[in-house]
Length: 149
Image (cartoon, rainbow, N blue to C red; front, side, top):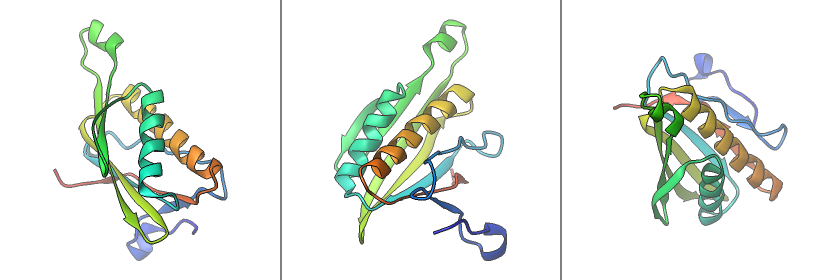
């Protein structure tokens, strides 16, 4: 599936990562801190969640509240805290089975306005997409979009 222009047909854009090196961009921090991204894969739900969790943990996120359908990942920039500036990002990752694989939704639920958390989230999600593709699964990543508060 190629990229569709949301301005013309109203559907969100996606990138087919089987055709290119998987990369997930950061979100637009000035528009809205409540951003959401969908990652569709041919991997089973449990495998998709395990890869997402491991990749975010490798990007210095702490994984909490893990269940069979998702988890919460939190990043705190401790150097910023020592400099008396609070810099944190909390993501909620939920996945559900779909025909032929899983659909994972990643939502920024707290923080996220600082670049370090955005950068680490993008790195972790990109690593997860690459790992799933490396395992032979199809991966499609949508664009970040604003969600209601």
